[in-house]
Length: 122
Image (cartoon, rainbow, N blue to C red; front, side, top):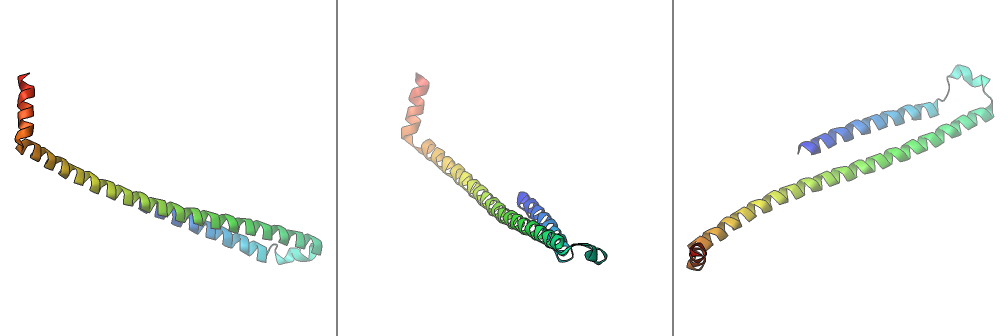
């Protein structure tokens, strides 16, 4: 359960940082330069800056979506590991019970006691 909590906290931290980064870059695309500099720039330069910022934003958005998908995969794998651990503990416990049951049957059976006695005589 502790690794799952840690994974959840890491996922939250990464997601918040990615969203803040995306928000920052989105605001730069909407307002790429301070208004006082806008008259000094040529229209072609502004279009190039906007296109470059748009490509950068699309790439960051794609990467964020990829990270989020990987986070969900990690969460699913972590849950699966926890489930397998629980099943493993359950099966170990059942095996111990069955082992003890078999030992009790063997000790109560005259067939196994005779075999033990014969092997001790040799």
